[in-house]
Length: 416
Figure: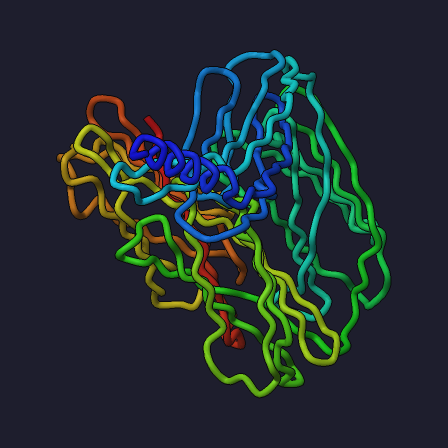
């Protein structure tokens, strides 16, 4: 009789596990050459502690939270069977797990395709005049090749072409001043490294009506090196309030925040990146009354410098005796001996200083007088003993006596 009781208890326990609520497991994939993004579409049923077990079909696997997506890089072309399994953990003295859902699909990875590229651009009002527009080229290349030349047709008979170095971070922007309000057909042609070329055109409306602007500042978060605080800086000539602010953080994770016209606090969002690097960040502000404004900047999350690297800590800018005179000072890597410092002042002028003595303080500064007000992309490059070189760039605004606002644009990276 006792044996029969134990057997019936075992059957009841087995039935309990079998009738656990099954989860509706599924996922979508986006394939880009040999990189695949997995989007988890699972719907969970029932409670309890659950985890997702990903098997990518190439001998690798990953454990995530039950509803998280993931990314995976395949080392070679082929057909892989990727599976997603959801397990529930049961506290029965041995922390047993139960499969509550399962889904698999084939992943077809092809060999790398040939070069493919596109061109696009956004525009925003300029700070100096209502008739000034700032254009931002938006390059795209399937093999991530950089633009080597960008040509602009502004629609008013005054066009320009700009060459770019593939080694420098750039937001590919250009400022253009129109003589009068009108609708202009603007075209951008982007030629990439390797020869791929693409052109995009659209109509741009230049008007002197209800202007509005968008800008933002960025602050580091000490407790999280890969996190940044983004602070919106709206402006409207008619004192209109933002109704919605949309952020593009440059890593594919975007967000929009709606506001009431009575809101008076800071318009702040925090964002955490998965790894260091350079990211094009854009803010678009939709104002009460219909005015829209866009502002884009590049931000760089640099890894912490190590003893075996060289870097430039920062360079400071001070206004000189005139409105267009600037004094520059840089601080070099303390564990390296600087031998040569080169300044590119962003207006076609540059200079190099060979240090007579290691890290000579009087040679770490430079003075430059700009020909006119504007925003200049200034870079300092330091060559250290042993061959290591470091570059640091930021935008420097030279104001006229009537300017009331300005901006700062930072870059920071190391060249080995």
